[in-house]
Image 1 (cartoon, helix red, strand yellow):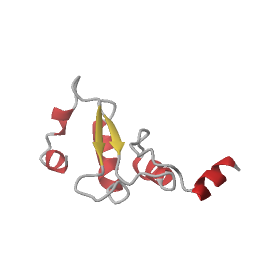
Image 2 (tube, one colour):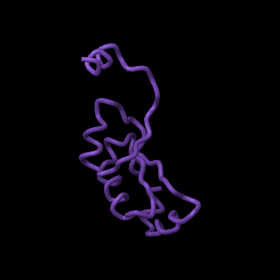
Image 3 (cartoon, helix red, strand yellow):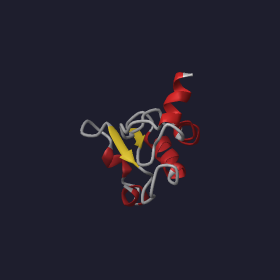
Length: 91
């Protein structure tokens, strides 16, 4: 994806064939590292394409990702929560 954005061909990704783009922010190791690129993608896509951050998205960092990227849809694993998180959520 980073090559497409850098070559200014991102418009080729919008249209009926693509509704969402799952990304960690280019060549980043996870979405937290790629927040700047993810935010830029979201702004560039406007209403044409949903930018969906993924990779490393967890309960303990999703609020930060929302604040830094403005994205509203996220991809995360369905791993069981650690006991401490489950207790905190049920309190």
